[in-house]
Length: 529
Image 1 (cartoon, helix red, strand yellow):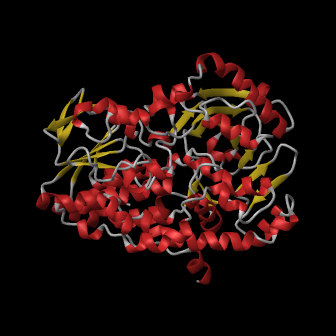
Image 2: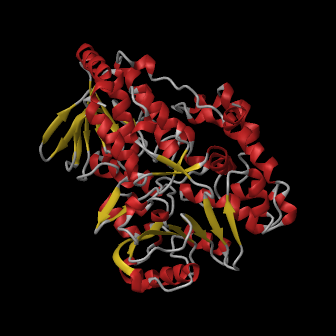
Image 3: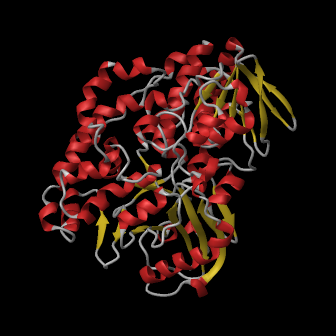
């Protein structure tokens, strides 16, 4: 490996010497790691500061008693983006991380016992949908094709910055708008295609990847289902945390100064320009600062309110935020007969979603279970299971007292799991960790416990989201779910590419011209080959 990377390291070192430019990255989540790699490859001297002792942020890991759990994301979509990022740094992503493509991608379990095993094979998928509605099954292929065309139209839009209103009027946006149908929601779009409400749920629950209700989420995001069915759902061996671990390793080998366990206390400012950051160990000076920390939390804790013109504390408090999640990470002393991914829907999905939107803990929660150790034996001791259970709940703006509610809500979740597993799993538990919205705020520094950042409504997208070249503070660039294009690993990696290009061009880095986007092939092109 060292021999393979030596030419890149020499080139990067020479470029840094030529540029003399220093970049400070705050936060070693996926966006911060990708930005650090790309800016180092472009010729910057990069220091990355992370408050935790391990990299990854919400894409990190819990490792206890022989069990490994992803903290947040548990599956990987659209690996083409990371392949390009690694390639830009002289590396082969597939040599660093082993991906296992899942088929079925996940099981959808309805409360009345009906189920759908979602598969990228369109004929098998139609047969699965026929379990819910034979009439709707015949429309599946055409629906996915429409969303393929929508995805292809919007992909270049999601790969460029939106720095002001004029960026909305560019040709690619105008051409794509008819496919966007901005007056509609995800659920509204699905009404055009499918009569059965459970079929609509099967193709709309993905809006929860953004922490949003399908009844409010803009219709653009029906493309998430296409990304799954068109490009596949993957399990990285070792979990999604293996991706960020590989990125941190590669960044270090490239010469990025990765400093773990060193939280930033505040940004250094000269007027309206950021000049670096201060930690307990000293001051780091920089020509540019990339912020990868949770946006609202970072702004309200690291930057004085008076220094922000648009994104003040008052305005941040008035914004709409995603839902939160209640989490159980369980080590079981037995192999459990559940699919790798299972989504078990509430008996009244619309009510479930409305309770979450109101900031509450649902009375009858929808739950997601990952039983990845059935696919990946590295995640648990032999004969054991590592179970990850998530229930979407309201964020902390709803005023729920989670200290009081958590014990009974845990029992409710375990009762739901028992129904799916056909037995009570409580006697099998050998390890347990619980996360509530309070823990997301206190332990992971997530504003209001809103796990998926700012909501993705029309008033908080594109240039109305905090911009990748941050408009309030000169010399600051944003990456992560709180900026354009939004939440979810693929879009976070796109935010890193956008922020890296802007920063590299503004600093005049020698490799700035190399940080261009080569569009990944569409699923149609891949199939043709």
